[in-house]
Length: 198
Image: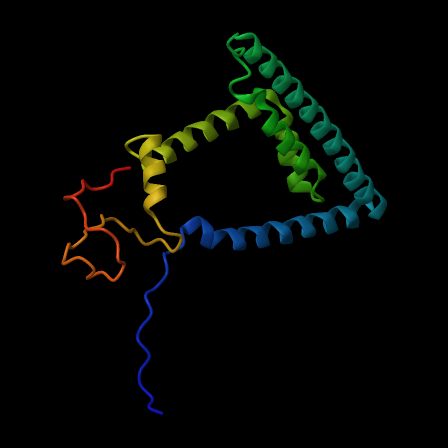
């Protein structure tokens, strides 16, 4: 048995800065939430903290339920308009902001004072509209960066990338030899074939 140096492995794709800092941010947020809850418990008592947590969960559940009903009503109305051949109403294309209402409810349901404060801010329509505009602009910018040629190019790029991130461009070139050289026993080709195109 011989021992030798192992070949160096190629490093994987680099993680983005946000993905590297996300675990640290989540840990800092959890520590801050626990610290704030202990401060409130020390100042107002444990029952006040329990009342805040239960109240946040109840209000958050009510917000999520209301937003879900609105989203279902919008979906039903959109489907009825589509069946009747009418265009969708102006507010239906963007979803009416139900996603951010559900996010606000979820943040209210999470135990913690910071998440409750952010959830309450998202309940305000001007804040929700501002966050929605910024999210749409960020998504459009990322889509343009990812696929300068549009959505069709994005699908094409996604199709030619293997799961490990390696690009596999190319075409099949058949070298015609004597019949039976390939061992397949198939009939010889009638002539050259054009390359495959997507």
